[in-house]
Length: 254
Image 1 (cartoon, rainbow, N blue to C red):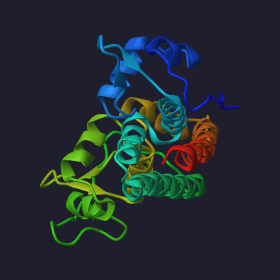
Image 2: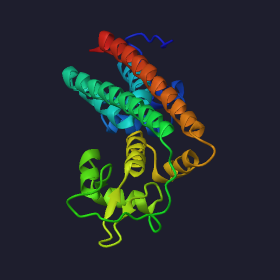
Image 3: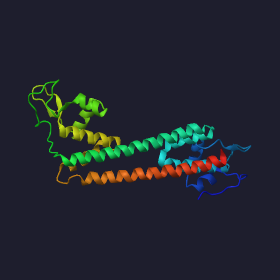
């Protein structure tokens, strides 16, 4: 529960810091960054904070878990300058990102279902070749690197990077050496793409892809997605808490 302070109360930086387990330097940094309104100054130059500053700090600390430090700071700067509409726009962006992340998670789960229903016995590209290909007429069920890059919205260099990381194994035309992606390689590329959108690093994806292809099956990746789901739910609740604290601040100190 937020601590109630009378309107005439004056707080030193250390008072404001102790209430939230922060350092006095953090308080000064927040003020310098515009997260807190400018402090009043004594004739000797000492900072003096008010309940408005304490309320702004509570709002910022509540906003940060859901929005991240950078966007929470942008929200508070807008509020402190009286630009509430701008602050609400920043909040909308975070909610839109959360919705997009939830859609991404759903897409990953759908990709997993496809992966589970089709054998994945990919072998390194040095031993996998197709004959009879041309640069304009791949065999049914295959696409060239440029086509797959366009489909995923990535650069061909990104697909080559995934190949070098051992995540996707394109087929090779023995005559030209062109990369050609069959159904299994396309599926793997889609899965990697979705996981990258979910914030996973290539080194985190690599063991998951390996485990999916091994006798261990899909369970390791399912557990990862369950954790991702829990983090999204936690972020959603953090957004709600931040909104409540910001509304309390606006209602009292706008």
